Length: 383
Image 1 (spheres, rainbow, N blue to C red):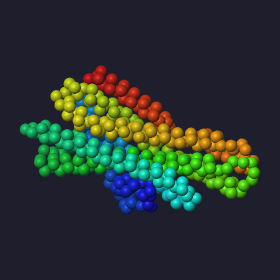
Image 2: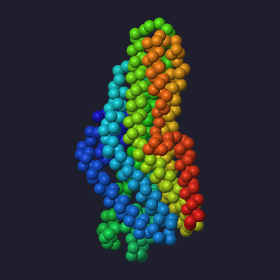
Image 3: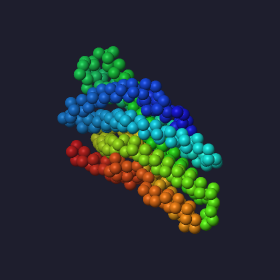
Image 4: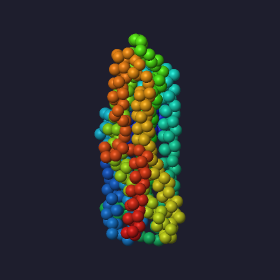
């Protein structure tokens, strides 16, 4: 299944790497391998958190917990999208049918414009997440060299505790390399989900714009016109396809959104707390340099998630406004009934939700930041 016009090659490659793309080979095997690998990875990370729960170094504990929650979120997203693979196939099939629709003509330029925009967003996300990872990893490895000089206890790039001896140089180096490679892949996976939801919602937006433009171009008068009836029927069909596509996206991402919402809220709070107390630390400037790109990336995740919901809701309002502004009441009864069907269906707004708890919007993003600020105040009081 080729969707180069909507999903660009880097995004498709990552989707194939994790066995999400419908035509990728060994999809089931990939899902099993990645699940076992990430679960093992997370067990050692949570083991570190539990074993250091009573540690007096709260900043070190929260630094490790922030990355652990981010990795846990990636695994959750992968599991959800693997279980919704049939829905994802339906989404891709619907998008492919939209691209192959022969009646679009010049309106296909709208889809091309949105596809180019989604491609640029995807490339920017992959680039920024990779740069953020390199900066975080580089500073962390530099700190590890200082901490490990003259000490018997070796520290790792990702904070973990192992049930076996890792003091040997060979084993220690091997684990560091594995941590580096896997964390790099997880960074690309986090960018993949953000790019994917942006791409899908932009495609829905292009279909809404085509619908609105087509409706405004239809001549409105009371006389009968069979060709106009066919256009109205096509509009009803296109509107139903938009509804079905947005519902499939909502069903696939509603639990992903819930995990993203909660995880980002806590991680933003934890990292903000590290920034707040870094002024009293010996290496405060180093902590800021290490965590700031990661902090921006987490905020970017939250903003993109909430903005896609805001964008979809606004596009849904565009359908309602265009239909109501048309002179549908001047049509003959047969055609008016067709338009009234669109009016009735447009009463239910297209939206993305956090597992039906709240609607994703810029207001939800603001509430997330407020909740994170509350966590920072609580941690400062405890600290």
